[in-house]
Length: 83
Image 1 (cartoon, rainbow, N blue to C red):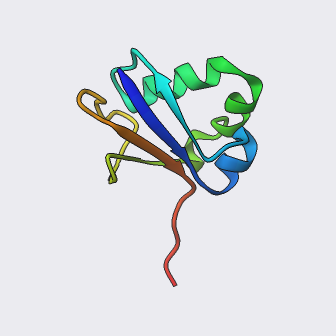
Image 2 (spheres, rainbow, N blue to C red):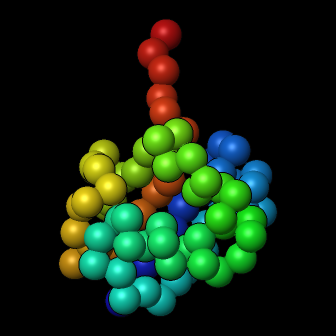
């Protein structure tokens, strides 16, 4: 499947771009992260502390076990704070 991947804040800085289109066979967000980590060291660094990463699939906050079937967009970002 083809997914639009968005990166925000320090994830964007570590990876080097704000978005990309990827072809993936990943069935879950966690599997997608594993694929991304295997691409290059910059992805491995960005996703080295998975507890510090939040994710949204098609603009809905979700967890790492969320299925990707039918998804079009995945966004990765640091934890949000209120204020």
